[in-house]
Length: 207
Image (cartoon, rainbow, N blue to C red; front, side, top):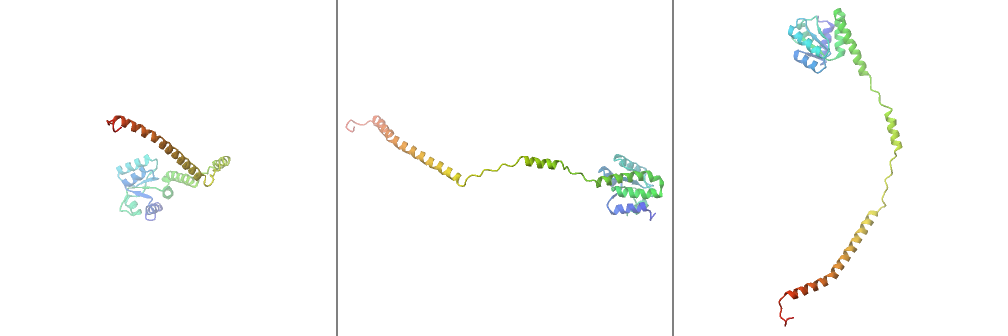
């Protein structure tokens, strides 16, 4: 079993970080929709096998019982023993089960499913989304149809002239107001004096 190509592929996946082992890690990988197939050792417990099948069924991936025991599977991935593991890379999963099907024909059907899925995913990755070339000329045409209007420039010094005119007008108006105020002051003062003279009790001699 040391030279088994399927176990060698599982060891390679373990070193590449594409294999999860143990019930908890396998469950998490399936919950994250990253698992491609679940592998169970031949002498795994009934409860472990049921859990593995349930994890795989939730995400519609195959659950495969290997013809190797826990000790042999664990030695292949560098562990003392392993009852359940899962592959996260579709290429490695298809290669491992394909090598297993070459020695054990009963795995040919699941190997064909994984191989077909691998081809479909790889073709999807190779395709690039076409750019929308029709939208680009339309944008260019719209920019050509609506030319930018030139910004009218003010003559240099126009603002300062207007400001100076306003300030000059303000000074003139202020001067007029002050002169009017000064002209009205004497009449107002004389009226105030008359009112005060009437109210103040002075003798006839003083008047």
